[in-house]
Structures are given as C-alpha cells and as structure tokens.
Length: 80
Image (cartoon, rainbow, N blue to C red):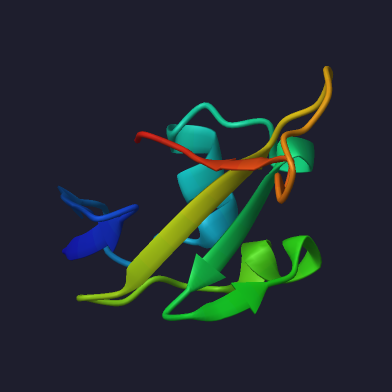
C-alpha cells in the first residue's frame, strides 16, 4: 500500500499502525508528533490507528537546545 510521509510516497505494509511506522522509521516516539490527513494523532492513539491507502502523514521532530530565532517553534520536519 502507498502512503505519503512528509511529502515522499512510500510503500508500507497493509494494516500498518502508526506505532509500527514509528518503529520502522527508527524514530524516538517521545520526540515526534504525527499528523495524519491534517489531523494531529495523540501518541496514545498510535497503536490503534491503522494507515490506509493514500494517507498523508507528517512527522515533526521536537528539537531542543540553544536559543530559538524569533518565531522559532522548536520543531523540524523530518526527512524520512
């Protein structure tokens, strides 16, 4: 099945859960936020959220340290 992750089309397993996707991408769950089809999905819902053909996923990693530039959010979009 094909989904889009941060703008990149990828093939993933059928019935893949968001929690499994985070593991497959070797991401630290406590440092990322996930938006699925323009809706933020709470971390507690990842194990029960199944991906579907054509889903659009945005993964944002929280970054820390140093001073933020004016308007900085402390987040960066991951290159997956």
